[in-house]
Image (cartoon, rainbow, N blue to C red):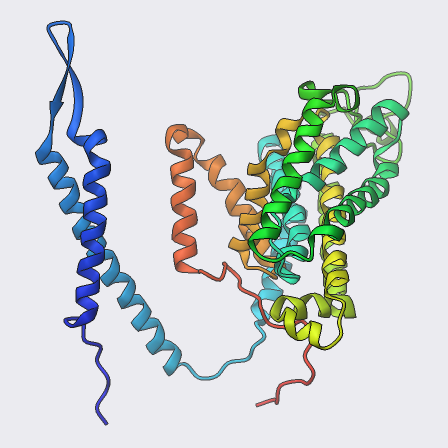
Amino acid sequence: MTAFIPDHSGPGMTARLKDATGVAVVSLFLGIPMIALHTVDVGGVLAVATRWPWLIAFAVTMFTGRLVLQFALDHLKINKARRERARPAVRATRPWLKWTGYAVLGFSIVLPIMCSGNRYVVDTATTVMIYVMLGWGLNVVVGLAGLLDLGYVAFYAVGAYTYGLLSTHFGWGFWETLPVAGALAAGFGILLGWPTLRLRGDYLAIVTLGFGEIVRLILVNWTDFSGGPNGIGSIPRPTFFGLPFAPAGDGPTFASFFGIEYAPEHRVIFLYYVILVLALLTNLFIARLRKLPVGIAWEAVREDEVACKALGMNVTNIKLSAFAIGAMLGGFAGVFFAARQGFISPESFVFSESATILAIVVLGGMGSQLGVVVAAILLVLLPELGRDFSEYRMLMFGAAMILIMVWRPGGLIASRAPTVRLHKEAQP
């Protein structure tokens, strides 16, 4: 039986040449103001000089590079298809994910002990945990229910300002405010979702984007309520069962109670463990919900909304529950953010934050809890590692995102399999 060998000299090659020619033509037009024309000083007068050979060389390079890139991508696709055909059937479950998750958990527990003298590492790890918690909250909406939310930062802001206002005006503590802020954020999620979740696709994304901007503009302009652009300062930090992390004074402190020398790192490590516990509780909560009827309904709506309606399911209420729970988890993260920073302002809740959280969910793999952790680590550490190249920092960030999405378009750890199956697979 003759093996099929793809022919790259026929229409496929013609299509590649047309595509590469189009790229070269676009490069010519874009390169005229940036490469071909430049100003020079001629006797104290600016004159325009031309560099046409450079422009032609640039266009030829783009033409050649585009062809090489297409050949390389096609070669990778062919090899991948051959490997998949030759690979024996494997189980749908991936037990290595479970052990990887345990390894990440163990490392996160001992990290402050390993790096106790390096505050920068613990602070960065705390930031990662905040984004992990936000990513898990948005994963309920985007990954499980299949809803595109571009204004998730609004619920993050609701939680932060709830704690900021209640703590500074009424003396509420961190643990007292946490459930109130979560309930308030969930209420805002229901308020947004009830009239808008009948929309689908791009229309829903635009509405959620507008909601996020509305919340930010209210915080900027309602000065008497939110402090306006100046924000809210002097927000109290969480205490260890009433023991503040402060130098010895009139009252008992954490250091004096345990008879140790005061160090500012104690509060940093304590805050890290607080967000770690909150994140773990969030993970357990979501994992439990996924096995309940509401979680199964989320995944069903994500896969086929029309079929769910035909079965008599109330799709709007199912989406609303996902929106409310995701918003509640975002509110919890906002409370911790305000407590950690001690100061909040509208500038901390701009659209770029929503985009980053959404990128974490998509990059990690929609529906994957471990994927969110990996993506949060990458998206937080890449900008940090690029501080020495501040001029090219965002360029490096964008290039890394493009390469990862080309390599793994479904996310780093794609997880679209249903959480609950009707029957177990046959044992080999």
